[in-house]
Length: 436
Ligand code: HSE
Image (cartoon, rainbow, N blue to C red; front, side, top):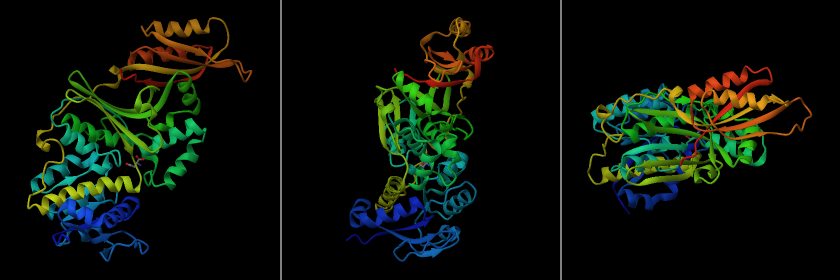
């Protein structure tokens, strides 16, 4: 039995907080042996009492700041979410020389540089493995295991709720709202799932991943953002017919001196492994000069997978404390002051192939006119399908896969197509990434 103890304060006893208590309790002596210390939760705080949660006799406070100021706490785990109280809490904990573990991507996307700098100044550790891709150990992989590499791109399914929704819509034909409600019930979605569906959650995670991978200071509003809610059931079907899957991706990619940062639904060839990562699973595909292409896959949300990442950080800090070291490596790959300022690529200049869906009158000459609109912008066509008129309506869906084109030239072509009298309504456009 190891008699050294690292004392933990836990703020927030929701889905992930309860997962942390469960894993620490189940892991007991095994975790202690790995850390070289017993990990004992001595103080918990929740806004409202949680009498049903067994905290093992820990002190129970209503004010999270009591934990930050508790002189007996060595490591504070922040699982309250949000960016206001959570920010003040982490600041308070760092100022009291606590090491901090957080799963809060919103907090770090908005205030990471300030908080990381404060941790460096205080000589304590601020770790956030659980903030990106749930149970996948991607932060430590990029930060430590790939330290000898120059990363050229990162592309990932980094919102579990969104992937769960797209998968159920595509494979079971279920309605968006119905699947979202199930994702909420399973503890995958955020308290307010708006950020899951509009791309904000994925954008926050991309900011953290890209900052690490490219050693860059990136603001939380830098990524272009299009949510999973922009995908219609018929797009999932047509994509499949064309040999593609639609996934909601976060992409960070070197583009000359600039960095592309974008989250959006993306058609991916069905033969690519990442196209077949389904359900709540996340996947992060990294291209780097040493390792080549790497694909990390695992549960991207949920109580125990996220708690696994939190506990990994905790054990790492506890291990250093137990060895008598100061566990105060920078939170990023380099100290905050050494992060580069990198220009973000203008989305109008970003190129990709495109999927277009429109409704057009079924009469001679319409297809020729549509293809002219594209060719006038020098955009080639990979395939074009006119669906038969099943509903006997005068309009038929037309699906087009284009060659590579910039957003600017594609938009010009789409405007010309939408101006055609024989085209009804707006043109749906989604990016295609072939990942050659
Ligand atoms: N709501 C998030 C998701 C939780 O669905 O990915 C994990 O960050």
